[in-house]
Image 1 (cartoon, rainbow, N blue to C red):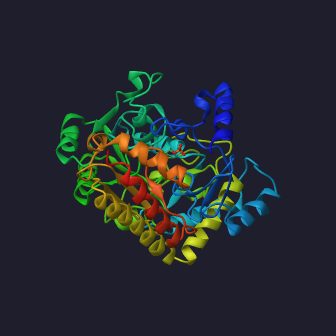
Image 2: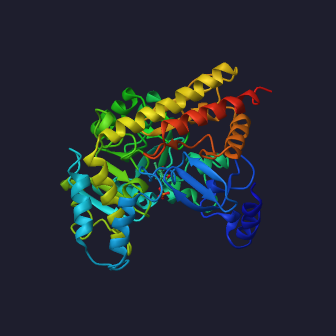
Image 3: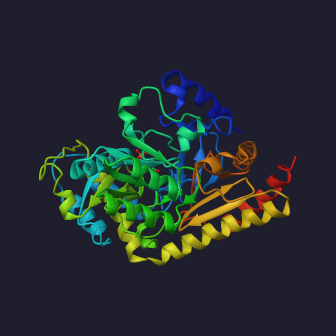
Length: 428
Ligand code: PLP
């Protein structure tokens, strides 16, 4: 069933390290060969062997409207016909900036970049430049892209490969990264007692890179309180949760406001994009207004802006979309939980808006260490079997899943029926 993909993977491995351009795609944690994708359509992915899958990954989040949404496609094609890139300002950038900024109380200005990694890296520089401090607080299992100082106990791809950090990152560059356990208030307090040089806390308020593990309100309140008390800035990394957890991301469902927000893939609807945003005052420090340097040849790329803008307009025009996505995510995980219980398999499930996660373990994990205790072998078998039956889940228990508008209740029901059969075989 994967004959052509196996051949394609071998060929890719000859010229691309591990055959992939981002490590998690290699399926190392679940085994087997990743299907090579020929095309997507709505809820479905089609591989080069002709297999079709209901896609619960949606390019790791960006495709809220699924593959090849007609409106987004039209906006992109219209823009492409006028030129791919100018390296000069366009009206599309201002329009998307206005749309995003108008949705949040705490941000006045936004700067577009080309990836989530750039967004968080730039946000950290901004926080350091504004506060004139050096240390940053990061949490185990939160992934903020692959920039040097943030590649310390990052979840998902890194966790899957069991590397707490990466060779090639000098210790000198990570010595300012203070690592704390997610949802652990006393560790965080201790961190602020020990350093008077903390520029910021960066956190995924809904962590999606150690599976789906939301921060507790109490923990986020403590983050806010400590930042206020010590003159540090709070950064919510909403690269994954922005426009996914709700129309206003995690910020929209929490009572806590961050000083800087970072966005990524989702605001580009599948095109490479990222952004960071803050108050007028904070953003005024950024070049060319201020002295903190940050730049990008392809930043604010018109095609990416057009895709993001169309997606955002569609979402704003019909906020009921979130209710529907959320109901489907709940239906899926509740169904999985039900068939797991029926088959005597311990499964913990979680959702936030259209994001979902499930863990093969007895207790709901609250941090990275607890996620590490889940049954990974069982996850791998479940993943492989579901794939064979046409359901494409994220290929690691450290990753979240995503629902798009094209996924129907019927598809979810079929998925649960299949999971029931698969779980029967998981018991032994
Ligand atoms: N921050 C979060 C929360 C992410 O989930 C990711 C990627 O998955 C990033 C940052 C990095 O984004 P990118 O892969 O676009 O560099």
